Image (tube, rainbow, N blue to C red; front, side, top):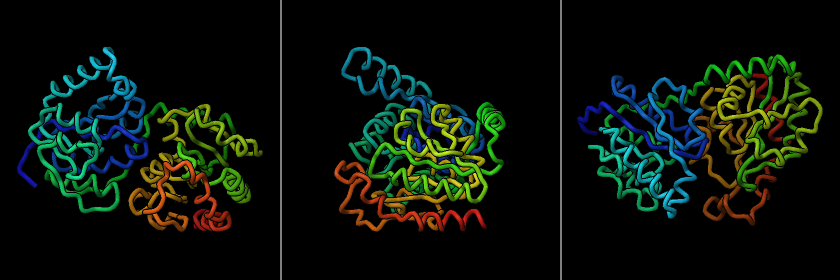
Length: 340
């Protein structure tokens, strides 16, 4: 901890979407410590709706990931150079790199801020961009990020609250009326970029039946591009497929009013935490102690797995680990949540 009194602060957490959603306690902590400071957030272009309505975020600085990928072309190189110059021109006093990867380390260095804080064990040589390196002791991702804020001089404030933009809340109000959706509804989030994280879709269909028995609606969420993953589920009567309609902001509006969210390790799950919604979190090859729903360990149903021996990116896993989570176990938990 030191006596820095910053006027302009930058949080760097570009991606992934779930990680962006669960990084909000960092800005809450920084704002509590320095309420008069301007707090900007560097986030991947397309993810800004997840945080732009947060009252502690003054500006979003958009990072175009596609441009970064084409850094070797003249157009890409000059776009990145221009972006780095913009970061320097902002004249930040304090920068926290909560991503800890090569590109975020580069962005941190480019600000030339008086205090550039990141984890000592940041990957891809990101630590070269910091002039203050924190020896992280925590296990959970959120706690690790909060250690950076604490090192800067802020008191830890584990405030996970997310906020919905007015236009998205209004869209959802109108959509529910048009679709005659029950006042109470269950959100199913069955999609994943990684097959290894997906609980089988036919199992989700059986959980949808539980909701129907309880007399509540069922909505399925995910990215529009993931529509093929949910086809067999959305063909069931009474299951509302929202994927074609969703943006990130709209997804947040849907999750924010749910009676319960049943989800794989996904962005929708971490949004549900941010809106304090009841959840049933399904975990396979990813360790909930590290990336689980923050401070909601009791909401997790996890497969029995040795995390040192598997990696969710391995194509050989398929959904074999997730299949070991039994439908009856999940259904029982859903009943308990809805009856409480």
